[in-house]
Image: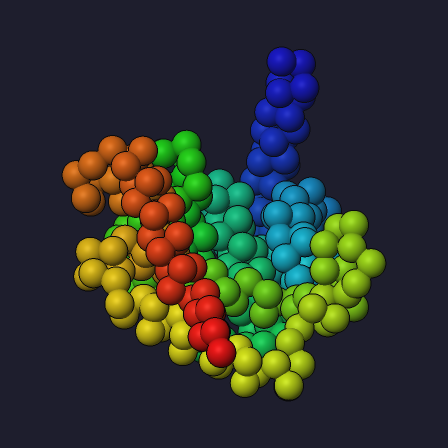
Length: 265
């Protein structure tokens, strides 16, 4: 409680001092005096500015670069702010600084730059996922996010997939936390492509032999990443029945992919 009171007092003092400085800035005419007031405005609001930059640490940009962008945006906010609007400076500065930080990520932090439409949709996907998981208390599926945003599941998956475009995984990184092999060692070589193609064709033929309802269940579970409880609601059965159905379908598909026994000579 004492810490919260101290923080509240600090914020109040910052707002009061900022308001006084803007009043002085309005009446100041000498360039040196104006520069001195602006410098103090920056100093007073620097903790707020740096805290906003700190929210974006660990997303693929250097901390120093984020601080520079945020502090430049703080100067921009001071230049644009009109004290006569009756607003607290922080209510104007926070969106300005946050907007510049987001623009910096959008324009400078992609190693592999996706289309602008996907970049903008990604922020909506991240926000929708957080809201849905908070409301449901569980991890949500791509299909649920797509319905929330009224966009195709494929677009949602594309937005989820571009996360590594900020900072791609190094091929020298360990394949697993305790693994001695690197991620690059686990990638298929050129000679394995034909084998993979044959396996994909075999799998496609095996799935095509299943009844439409069974194919739909597998699509919901492994393509749309629906949970068993969601599939149960769609089918009008219990979650336990869905678990059995999926297990039966996997066993049947594996059996279809098993090589047949050679004929005895």
